[in-house]
Image (tube, rainbow, N blue to C red):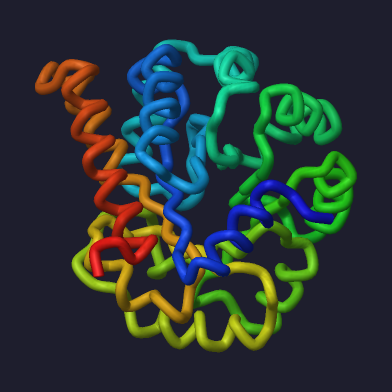
Length: 273
């Protein structure tokens, strides 16, 4: 099965470029801002966009993204409102959208129903960080049957035998966690990540995209030749926090986020070399 996510990575591979995928929290500071931000990122030349569905007990998210989830949930945001907002963007010229969502949310809605909502909204991939291993094969089959991708996470600390099992229920790309721990901005790319990327390259033909701790253009270069994509969350979500705190207006924040996204896209695409 060839999805738009797969096509995106194949196109970039032919150009010897990495994919850049920013993360945004749905509903922070509100859903209207989320729609504006997705459009702004699309115009900045990003290759995919990850949309976080706020959850009260996030599994691996650091303090910046946890705070953004709390801000959205404090406004009594509902999953159906997120889908309604994203559906309004369906049909616009945007890169593939990927949902980062807790399995508790998917399970509560029912896997078939949640997938149906994703398809209607134009979401083309799912990342379910807390998907139980014994449920992964069934969820993967249903996601694939709907023409979507199920992206799985692996960390430097994930036992290699466990990684091999995870890869059996993964498509689109592999989300490679850059460091053990939670998401957030860090100074350097860890050596353990580079070792794991080399090992993974022999284990799967799926693209490898690195997230958790990637926040600067200079973080991209060490990954070139090992990974096929980079994911950035906290560095963008921090701008949204400043809107809530009254330090930035929405227009100013969007301009700054667009500038950052253009710089990261240029680094991923090799335009700054």
